[in-house]
Image (cartoon, rainbow, N blue to C red):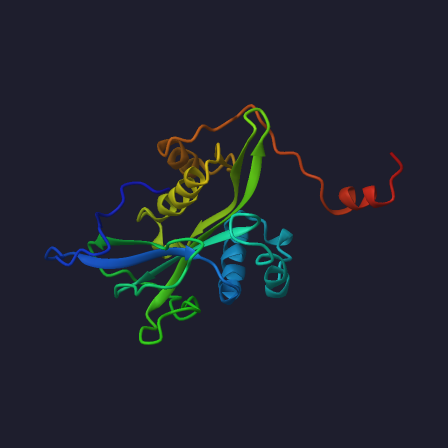
Length: 229
């Protein structure tokens, strides 16, 4: 649950209060170099949802499917990075990275920082770590005749939770939707994840309890390959 978040500063702020520790954050578009981290993050999500038996994605399958279309026209991923140093500008014409600085009461500790070291870190700064991601795709609202975004995956790594990062990732998707004139952003949430439900409601989202997810997959889907209908 994204409860009370630490204080946030503008990315250009230089005055740090005594007893506070800055953590610099950036949300940017994913690139093929991020695939190994995306693969690990998706697996962590499968573990959290108790669905590792459904996890069959490989780095190869992700690399061959995620980056075949321009951003926002198909599968799109925002990567959340953190660093103890300010970020340098990166060239990204399709999406201007979102930089924020948050103040913590103690230095952030990441036991897997080396494993999640960013693949596009600045050459003179290898202290950039991937902390989370959000994957979303275009959708369509037929009643209004307007497109939207459907959020498929959202994850903030455990050691970076309760710092407002989930809100930052969803807000970035919502802001992009507004910029493109889209009608809505929607996603699913597991019924037992009450903390997430409360968090989403606090963000202004409506939980549509009258709807159910219907899914064709596996043998049930393959059966239609030879069906006569």
